[in-house]
Image: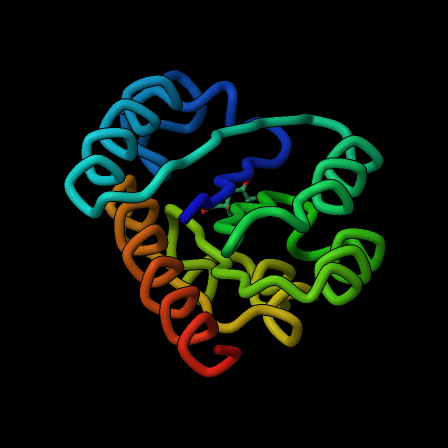
Length: 149
Ligand code: DQA
């Protein structure tokens, strides 16, 4: 089973970016712990990051061979109809994740355009949101496999 972990804009700056909100772990460190968990769970993962909406759409359109998608759409969570439509189009099980609890922050972050097309959302557990997201993705992808066979 192969799972895609996709990160949106500014997440390449983790570690130095608003560390009071997002913590001090870098994306490389998060990716290293994801690799460790993937090995433990016996799944393969690819990890991508882009600051560009169109590139994120292209990556999602090309993700049909993955069993599931774990995405932190970052600021595009609140604005991108294009990313939402791309997820709806590929129809692969999707877990939306956020480091911060978007519902306890500014009001404009309370709306996610992605949630209605995701299987579920994990928000507010810091870097652990990624690990929980991978576990959730493996779980829903296994169920999807069973029900389609
Ligand atoms: C974020 C929350 C978004 O509102 C914000 O724009 C981000 C990161 C999070 O992981 O908490 O860039 O997705």
